[in-house]
Image (cartoon, rainbow, N blue to C red; front, top):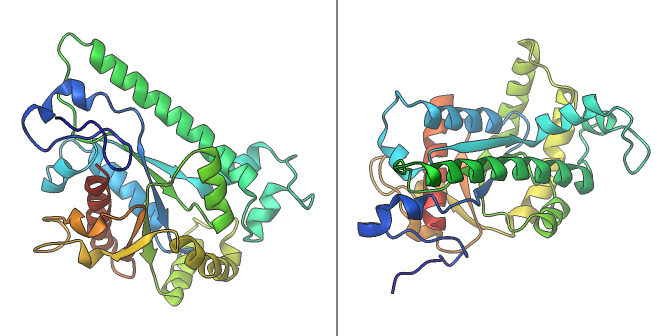
Length: 282
């Protein structure tokens, strides 16, 4: 009998044969949500953007593209919160201070605000995915689609265990996590360099405080996941070749990558981590 759902409750795609029917592939409408976490200056936002651009570039051929979704959406939670602070300056939080003040102080924004913004963005993305699937189904000849549905990279969330619980209550389980490990000294150097280059953010002055908050909360968050180092999921020849989903059978899970190196080296690890997470989930 053909299995129609995975152990995660998602649509199941067999690896060969009639699995390649466009109707099976176009049935997906719920994206996989992967949290991408790291301290200030860890480069998590840069890596999310680079992976998104990599997949969108049809002129660039690469073997790992066959194991990744055709499209990845990037939700930069910090940027959305900064935009909300600018567009809604009258918003007051628990202590009566504005959202911009909370962000400038490096504090964790109440989940009622952050989760609400994320939920709105996920609904927009899901509607876009559903519309694209409907358009494909209505086409005279359904186009060939990638084997996996789109994924969402949730950049910079959750920042606390309370954030995670609020997300689960409002939206559902967080499917997986990529944790970008960077030495604190390296993060501080990167934040300083970013500020000097003219790309300073409103909360850069509180980078040290934000790092302490991140380190104090990340252990509690990660305890909800099964942690795996990226070098444990790569079978042969480095991060760009084969991937082993067998090490990631437990769910949910968190893959650690070393973010101390150069941008391209970290991006190779990022691709390996997301590829393994996607293939393990489906």
